[in-house]
Length: 196
Length: 196
DNA sequence: GTCTATATATAGATAGAC
DNA sequence: GTCTATCTATATATAGAC
Image (cartoon, rainbow over all chains, first blue to last red; front, side):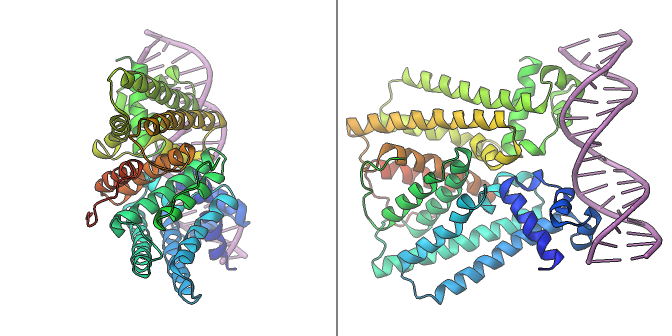
């Protein structure tokens, strides 16, 4: 892995763990094992680094979606796969989603990063809307609200529960919420008495 | 209003707008109209100020809940009132919820503030669970999942949608999600074709 | 209770040697 | 591409006068 890639990886972890405003080039340098001036060689400003990371997330998501298509999954399985992309944040390290942290810090970020974040959000909503539309058509999903609202509800609750699960040190919340979303979409009722 | 109260009010706005890590005592001093050394007289450290603010939110919520009881509202109206406590974040200023921003910045906050935030979250979930339980009993609410999961779903989606609505400059998302929550709780179906 | 002045540390960033 | 050295700005925080 190139130094540039190492920097991005370390910075990405810092952002998801602590936030964009709570790590420094010095922190990066320490983790990567180079001096902080060297970080500036790869990313002249912190903003450049921030943009590169959000951009990478967009690219990675598109690649993920492309690979997913090759797996011949049904729409319920694709929904599960979508949830799984978030599961690692809560089970592997003390992280939340990129949208969650950058959306929270929004007004302290450069306009460029904000815009890239909006595009990232739109990518995901667009993908979800397509999934919901297709799943409705095949009969796998049975909800009655319009797909846009349904997609909004999904992204909102995922983003929120990741933060809430971490704050309260209870990863189980994540699974409770994703299970509810899934059951709701499939027109099923949740078994009464599920305890947290 | 005392200087101490002014400081808290200004700091509160900064936190909800930019986050805890993106405002300084100098910023506070400028807004309040005193020198930054004077801020330290009221709050020796930034952490003291942070704790005071989360603590104030807890007190305010308890007071709000107490006042609400005096108004003789039914459970659906109480739910609406709960939503309204968040509405101002999105309509009055470019803010998100305290849980949202501090939950996102969690790992950069002191353990004391984290703990106070957990208590704040628990206050709200406890209140919601009681509302849901009572509303089920009266027949105003008709959901079948356990109240704990339902409460989790509500707080998650509210927290998430506040951030998403702000990021995408679309306050309407907030109303879409709260309407869906309400309809879901009341066992109603959302009208098809609601456009965003 | 608010001020001026200052201490100390660290932030983001650049210059220039190797 | 990485380093040492340095710059400038700003952060949190304190001392002590008024």
